[in-house]
View 1 (cartoon, one colour):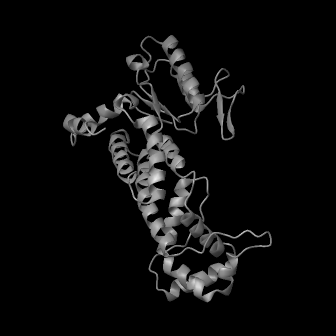
View 2 (view 1 turned 135 degrees about the vertical axis):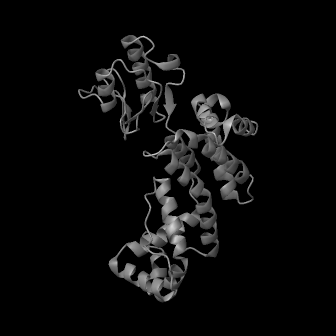
View 3 (view 1 turned 180 degrees about the vertical axis):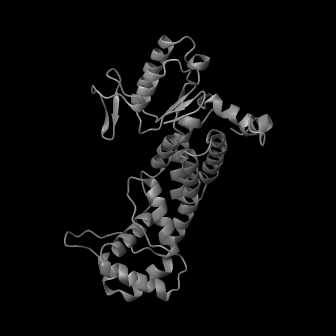
Length: 305
């Protein structure tokens, strides 16, 4: 939890919970009484005289209920306890919404990405294979430090990092295919008749290169939204507008995969940020107060929304 003179920001991990509020869990949302209130709730009960401007939480139904409960309690505790009658009280976590948008687009992941994932899985599956891969790396004189990493399929940002690292070692993978006799057999049919997708070909690497370039925009935006040691309110509008432009451009891409993926993501984007009514007005105010941009910049951007 981060607090300043007139605002409290609730991190997603600190879900507001009381005996009367829904509890959000990784497995889903369910009703469950709790004896221990959250750190945020303890803060509220100890500082009943505070005036609260906003609370930022994940976009979840459990938090919608919790926010209503908190607004009611704060209004009862102190006169004008919620600034502007709570009109801007509930702020949905931008990083969480961004995650929903990208996840929507990756439901049907491209075969090229699966091929590279299997490539990385082969290298990381045993010390001897990893040793052979490093020898190929040395022979190709690849300057990139570090190593390839295997992603967690459910986390799009880890898929981005896996592809980014694998692209740096493309020549090493190609040399491994030539020198390692077990490499090709790894992708052949197993006893059950199933065949692993791969190894990746030139087109697979090129598609992944485009994919990484596209995902980098979302990855960088997530890092900016999630910053805890710097001001983030004036970053939000730039990133949202930039992402919208990127989705519009790529939705018309001739590549069927990119076109379908970005169209799906654009629909999810429009659900949360597609109109001026869906954006918290405090975000616009933070840009207007930034002397580098002022009102003219906001007016220009909104004219293209």
